Image (cartoon, rainbow, N blue to C red):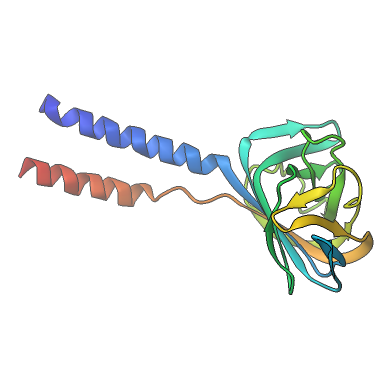
Length: 197
């Protein structure tokens, strides 16, 4: 075997391993709510469905005593009829004992109070630890503590939600699938044959 051909193969293997590891660490959490009322930057809204989307790193999972959580690297909220805003205050997704999932202030933003709680489903979340894909899981949810310090800053201004103790919503977590090993191996073989030619 020609030693000159080994470095590209090792480089390709290293690249594949790095890509696979990077993708496995990123997780996207999607929390939806059927209705909300409040204000963004002082402009009021009512009866608006919303979607909270956030990304985190599965290696940053934290056991906070009553469950596990992952602080987000990025988060945004899309409120129907109002707009989409990036959240500037640190947030997290949590899973508490008893199968209660939710969205709250980051553990690094004390006090790390809840903001959106639910759905609760002990069976659906049995054995789940926030590091893999799941859902969507639907059920009863509630909005709480958006007027609690620190207020939630966004690219549209301060976001406030009124407490709503009963609505419906969903939770979903998505980890991107790694690139297909077969396709990468095929591309590597094609490159090797061209080089030999």
